[in-house]
Image 1: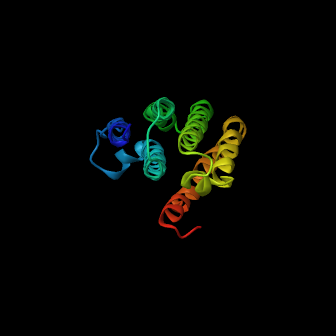
Image 2: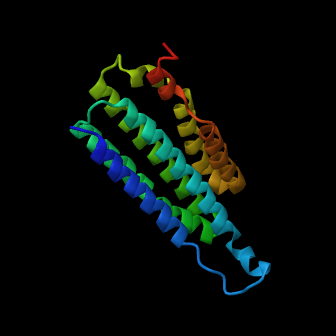
Length: 194
C-alpha cells in the first residue's frame, strides 16, 4: 500500500486542527490596545499549540519519509495520533479562556502526553513494518529526546495543580527541545549517519 493517501489525509487533518484553533480566537469588541489584553492568554495558548502541531507535522513528515510501505497497523496508529492531536483545539481554547487555570492546564498536559505516546506507537508500527534493521530504527535509536518529553509531560500534570506556571514552563521546554530540528531520520536516509 502506498503512503500518499496517509500523508494527504494527515496533512489535511492537521491543517483543519490549526484552522479550528485560530477560529477559536474571538475578535475584541474594542478598537484600542486595552481591548486586546484579555485575549493575551488565548493568543499565547494558540501560539504554543500551533508550535506543537507544527512539530508533529514536521516529525510526521520525516517519519513517513522513512517508511516504504504502509500497513494496516500503521493506518490505525496514525488515526490514534490524529485523534489526540484533534483534541488540541479544545484544550487550547479551554486553557486560554481560563487564563491557564490548574484543571485546563493539567488536561492540556494529559493531551500532550497522550499525543506523544501515540506518536511513539506510530513509530513502533513503522519500525515493525520496515524491520528492526531499517533506516528508521537506526535513526530513532534510544530516542532519549522522545522519552524525556514524555517524562516532562507527565510531570506537568500534577505541577498544574501545585505550581501552575511550572507546568506551563514544562510545555515550553519540550516545545523548545523539538524546535531544534530533529535530523536523525534525515541524516540516516541521506547516508551521513552510517
